[in-house]
Amino acid sequence: MSRSGMTLSRSLATLAAGALFGFGLSVSTMIQPEVVLGFLKFQDWGLALVMGGGVLVVMLAYSLAPRLMTRPLLGGTFQKHPSSWNRDTAVGAALFGMGWGLCGVCPGPAIAGLGAGNASLLWALGGIALGALVQGLRAR
Amino acid sequence: MLSQHWAQCGEAARSQEYGFGPAITDGVPRDLENGFQSLWASLRGVSNTDAGRVNRGMLAGAIALHQGIDAGHCTMDSRDNGEPGRNRSCRRDTGFTGPYLTHRQSTPMNLPLSLFPLGWQHYLLGGGFIGTGTALLFMLTGRIGGMSTVFSSTWSFVLQRPFFQQARLTDSRGWRLVYAAGLILGALVWWLGFSGGAAQTTQVPAWQLLVGGFFVGYGARLGNGCTSGHGICGLGSLQLPSLMAVLTFMATAFLTANLAARFLA
Image (tube, rainbow over all chains, first blue to last red; front, side, top):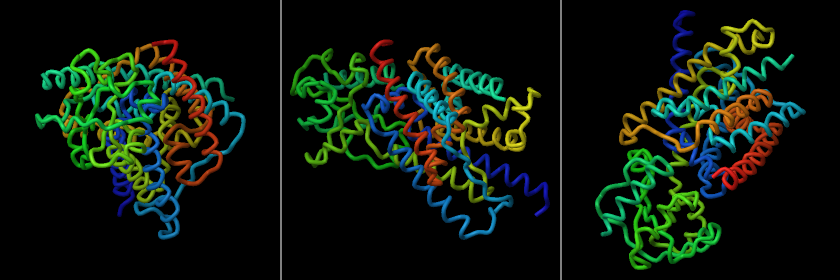
């Protein structure tokens, strides 16, 4: 496949993967802040199922794909999720949780919810973009 | 009278709490049995007699999918009392529409199932879709599909500061936007094809969305991951730091949500 054809097919794959993700968020009602807040208030444990189900599938793919294939089907290399436990991660996760508990919206649903016609989520989207901006400006 | 209750319930649930689509409308309330939801009711501090019930039976995932939201039946247990106003399942002050799931056949199974008063199938199904999307992205392109980085990488289009011009942001900003567009597309497909057509709404006040969003954005970028980055991808790759991050934000989120429900309501 030509280089540009490869780029295009990789983009289409990314779009399709995102669409599956967004569809899943919608089906599982995670795009509704009330449902997420219901989980955080111990009223409905659904979010644990959503996350558990997602993690299970991803765990299979992340562990098996690099063993079965030398590289991804559409080129590139298998990347790794970078994570380390340090002060930034701890403080960041704590702040993230505070915000999440206040609004019931996290980055994925903030984006996906717009596709389901929930314009109010633009507030959350703006807030997240602003927060990411300030974090970048404060970082060295 | 029952159908009237039903309509009220559906309307209340739709407008006040969850933004539900129309309740499943086969026109026949499922049985109005006196299933006992002891655990759930006691957790909620609701007595069994005035608890409104939702009997949704065991619906197949496909039906849940087709209904968009697995709203279930909001029914009045008329054998307990006949006052529509007392139907707790439709009252907002419970902080929850309170559909107490009654599984028809099995009393013992009520305990675990009542952790999921709106049913559990659509959660598992949706989680499967989310996982499949992330897994496909990895198998086809090798990319790790966390969702919060796009909020930093997109700023690199307009800001020249060294932080935003890091290679890890500029190299990925293109596909991350495509991925985000896919997210919107997927939700759009669900909305137009599966949800019954009503646009989603939320009762969470705008300031809460904005302020909460700010902390979500700041925290996720500082901590290098969110519910999908640490939660799905990090746990999926068995990273201990991600597990610690998930436990941390779950703890602060539980705390904040309960405090907010108590003092902001």
